[in-house]
Length: 188
Image (cartoon, rainbow, N blue to C red; front, side, top):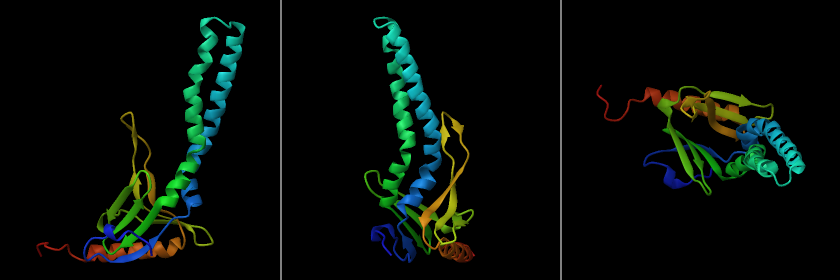
């Protein structure tokens, strides 16, 4: 098990730790975005080509630079299509851990981030495993907002791990134990 020891609190016990498969991580996190990006990118190239042909008819007119307005859309399209490469890199930097108190997603690298979810605050455990045992253990929902409009919640958790069913069982058992144990300092 490999995890940065500074992530653990005093008295906290590590139950499981693993790095995700970068390929599975990239496909889960960026696959749909990439598929959406293909028509977006293709249309932006088509738009630039049509604007370029129109500007060829009037080489010194105001429409001669109209095709350049499509460049930002091409760049966004390239970003969407290549998003799995970003997530592949993020997958190589990620480490997952399960302790007797919480589930931890530690993302290292250039933009480090650590997500810690206390076991007694995990609302569900969903295991998506393939026949070879690899899969995802999902236990939280994230709702992102764009321009003050919430999007559909996306489930997240331990993505692209081996023995997903086993990890899901460890997580369920740990949640049950955490809910049975009274919090320290609680009035009885």
